[in-house]
Length: 422
Image (cartoon, rainbow, N blue to C red):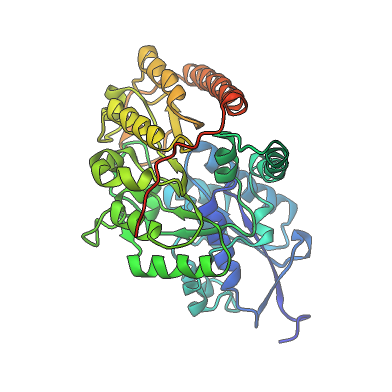
């Protein structure tokens, strides 16, 4: 079929910069049936629009629905296909906004049944993307794009002064990603039972990628010149438990690779960090690991228990302090949620105080996810949730300002724990 007769396709990630979603969108592009479809860079030139959605929280859902409604309104003559997590998390909301073809995450193979011309190569879905397409990078958050531009300036300043400014250097390095960033999903789903979360509804229980496959693909990337590896998963902390292994085996195998590289881990639930810390401490203290996202959600043990999360917050803080002592350049990242059902002001204040334990913090305001146990619990008034959310944001800004100041006044530290994997 000539290019003139091919359908023109525009693919778009509505996930506000989620690296996993961006890679899934790139994987879709790579599997496109080029006999029938041709990718275009401008949405106006397209016949078909593919939208990859996210339903992680209320804000992500709202953003995805806004994109769907906006595209329908602006381009009524074009055919839309909606995919991603949101159809499984809140199918009713998607169907209310959109009457066209819907394909949930993990079911892209069903798209060919919805269209007259096959849109994907079935074998192409096995060709997972590890580097982001330039087009998908355009939908990143503005903060990601800002970091991408700011990091080279920091590097130039460090070169001029002859000093790396930490933890700022590793914060920038871990939070920025571009077309040269190598990322690999090591697992899908989780073993958690969090009362507020709908991700498991979308992704299911844990499916770990086999360790030899992970190591072979990372080694190939390193041979090709990659120097920073992002390992992704809905919960990397529980990796391997369906294979009679655990996350310490995963980190040990990666860190044994005899290359000079940096490792960013996203996400690592505190439950598993605490449970396996004796085995994990040496690996997580390795200077190659520059950042780990450890989402505590709350710093009050009563709320943590009501969330049905299985750890004591004081143990999490103790373990993070040990890692920072072992490796002062280690960046601890977290997510903190406010306004969880029944949360009192004193319980909220515990979370506010927890900000000081982390270098990079993301604030979330609790929102009902349909079908979750927390939906049926007594809810905190929206005005109170908003007030706490704003207070948390201000506290985070203050903490980040302290981190920035600390980076420039702290002398270079050369006492990092040196670990040999010979």
